[in-house]
Amino acid sequence: MDPQLPAPYRGAERWYSAPSLWRKLSRCALVAGRKTVLTAITLYHCLRDNDTPAWAKGVIMGALGYLVLPVDLVPDIIPGAGYGDDWAALVAALGTVATYVKDIHKVKAAAQTERLFGLKGH
Image (tube, rainbow, N blue to C red; front, side, top):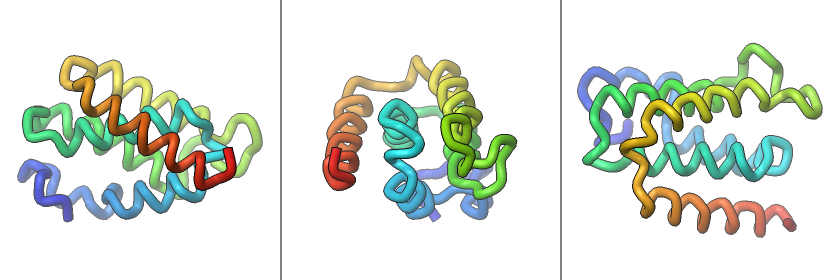
């Protein structure tokens, strides 16, 4: 369990956890695409920030949980469309919590995204 989660979200680790997010991103980075990965990691850093309010953390966990879940509206294995619904959930969450996304979240996410894609040969 992530110790920084507010009390109302402490049971959500059955849908979302940091290790499950990193496993998913390392497996699907090339298929999901750089924008999807960058957005997910940006939200991850915002989630971990103590300044992010509990309601915003709930929105972020919902979007990241949707990305991690193996079952979603459009199966991830469908080429070209599989991560479209995941992308939509991440973008909606990012728009909703944009006020709380800091430059440091973006910088960390960009660096991690580049490392992840570098490991994948791109």
